[in-house]
Length: 425
Image (tube, rainbow, N blue to C red; front, side):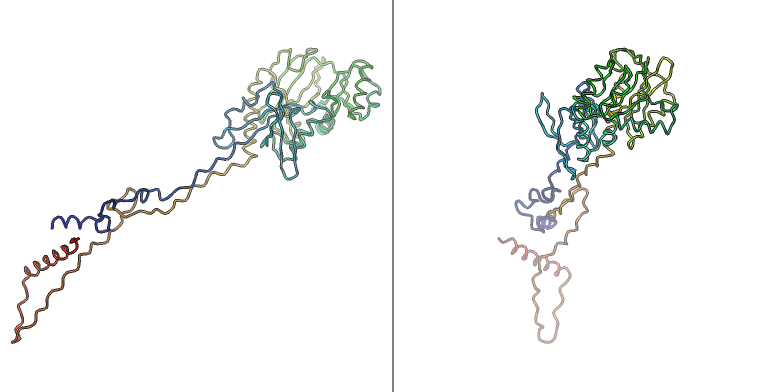
């Protein structure tokens, strides 16, 4: 009986799991509840196309940077002469990069940084046509592509600078005197030597020429007629110093260096930072508002022997970085581009968590941690054997009722008989 009592108190026995292998089947009731959803593949990292000469490795500068999340940014660097593209009004864009070291490959940029002047690098304004294609393809850039296109067109840019001078006054915005002609005949009328001629579009990539003799002017006029270009003519100023005022985002810098004949701006001479005056800051702020606003802008001026300053050039995002703070300026451009990409590019959708499937488990005697205990049905005793009905004796005397001790003994005997028949097999 003690053995039967222990067996009856076991919930697994009453539930039908008392035999061999009556435990939980593998994979059922173990918390898995079935096969989960496969993990989603993360979206590809955005691609940044940097149009820049090979002098600066922008791929290295952007290495390890990310836009949204921990996915590292992909960067491709190429020059205008290595690019060709196909764009449509539906926003489809395919850019082919053809480099001598890597061969042609196709990419679809998500963002563009222009660090090469679009005015040169090809005949007939080919770089500017690439800007048009990128704009048609809907690619955002560090500065608006229409603004870069206008800044790369010298006559268009000079027209806007002349408007600023009329608004601000010649003292607040001292633009260098220039004249524009659309035919070679205007170039040859009343020349003053020496002078600087800027052709647009630039034939054979040569846009700005310093002319000192009538013979050289005739050659330039012939190139102008062959390219059907316009020309900006600027007289000689005889400057002794060059001043650069630049703006990268909300950071300003002013630089100064002496002019050295035959050397490019900022090279061959000691570049030194100078204090930024409110007047000079007003120059770059006014130019940055042109064409809808740009974030990277530079203004250069010449200072003559008399101390007067004349604005001679305005740069877009391709502004060359010179001086002891050039490395710091590169880092500012990197952070500015990343901030613009985070603002322009949509944040990728995070994978939605998989819904838990219903768990199939077999009730066991143990309770898992974290799950409410389940109530077991009360064990049912086997049916008792029917008691024999005694017929009344003649004379009407009723048989005496069994004592309580006899009733208990009879119940135990009935239980024994029932369990004996239950375990007979």
